[in-house]
Length: 414
Image 1 (cartoon, rainbow, N blue to C red):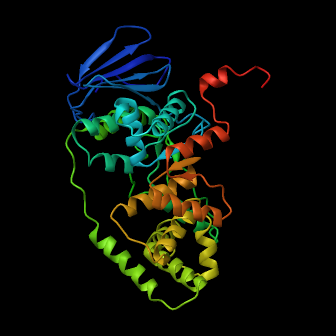
Image 2: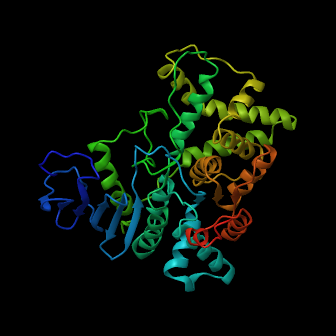
Image 3: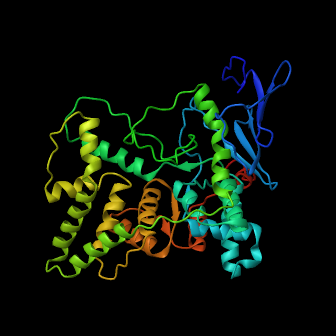
């Protein structure tokens, strides 16, 4: 790392560049000589598929160059900005939809129909011209890691390019944050609870699960540590996405078997629909009560955990944008006699529920997307979940979403 005393200042610097091939860092000041020094410690990770990372102090973005010649731009995180959330409509795409975009961009001849290709290219047009934001999540990194070789590179570069530095905070941390907020109004503690971390953000490494924070955390403060995190995080993400070596899937046999057993129990249960729903809600609560107990103990400093009647529990779980969906989604799967649990369900249910609660649009696999649509209708919410890109494009057009080019060409009196 640079030996000089470093001050985070756009007035002092033009560019910072990391040469990952030769392991050196170059600093280009606004005045004076350019400084190049070797990276002789482990503060910057070794990224074998990344050539360079460059931070532009004027544009406040990071450019990542892969060793195969692709250029990827990522918006930098500015802790001083008064607006921490997204400035354009947000679209969360399930992994298979990202694969469709990758195919449309790099090998369009593989797309089966003109309708599919047209929809994919329209999403690309919106995302590439400041019309929409397509955040990535840890689910994308996980599911991309199961691919290998050229296909992994194609999908990984597409995700990195069109997410542009935007991420969805890890759903487990969002779930924890909502649990704390729900308890805060019920435990009568005269204390300020700082949750409210933006779910869609450019904050470095927001996609990772933070096991010690319970969804809490003050707004990141500007400084050297945050700057270097912002400088290096995009390269790490791209490396994770395009690493040619596939990783083995972790089997979730126990989780699947447990939930299959719960569904079988509901199939034989002699009870009314309302009774089954109440029991299914209680079952979800029992599975996740540990989050709430931990929040009560660590945040509110109490072991006197309240009990909730069926009516109180229904109200509590209906409050958070994500919790209101994920709880109903589990209830639906428990009660539905046609449910077949798979290992992918855990990721799909949590990530798509979080996205549906905090993004403007979501496109996911058919089963979970259909259930979320039904839940949103029952709850009187706007349905923002789709199962194909064509339906998403129709919604974007109906809602009047525009690109930067289209906005520039609008008459001045519009």
